[in-house]
Picture 1 (cartoon, rainbow, N blue to C red):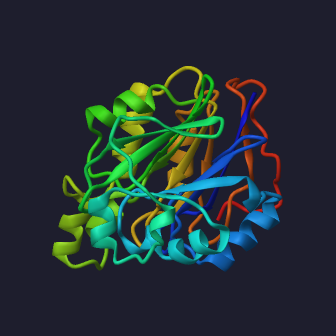
Picture 2: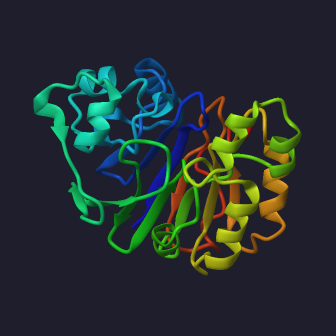
Length: 271
């Protein structure tokens, strides 16, 4: 048993994450175009025919930009809360709409998707874990704080996409206006490298084989800096940067850090 995971894009210009097994898969968010989603999956050897549903974390455009067309073209159910749908402006056929509730698992074929509440400046934001039997992968981005919900779910994950949005010194010295800096580092904005690292060091389970640093800021972070910071504390966990410009390789999550260190497809650079 294993799970295959990949980031198709991660950043303020678009977010889309793939988690699946040999039979079933889900996308978390669809913030890049339908065509680009299809192209990147094809390059990775991933089939849209295995995707059973799209789960929406919140209504910001970098998470839903390609959603309506992707769902319509591939007849994919869209799991979205009523409040998020209301604030999104999306036009989704009623037959494709599904709702979900925090902490109530949703069965998608052989997968089990569990949403939970998070802190972010959106109408009704959620993060997700995706499980197959005892294996679990988390998608944790757009987080204002490291809350008890996040800690509890992070501790269960064999792999996780974890936001490391900004370097605190780069943000402070950067050109962003004060109100935007305040929004980013406020309790409903984004996690810094330091906050994400504290979660990783304090609550990483011994069986976590992969950590994907996600949603890095173009202006207030540096992929090499973030990667070096986490790798120095990673032990047997492989650390990968999820790029804002291209897809990652596909990684196989088996539950064993020893046998799970290599990507299935290594033709793409990290940055």
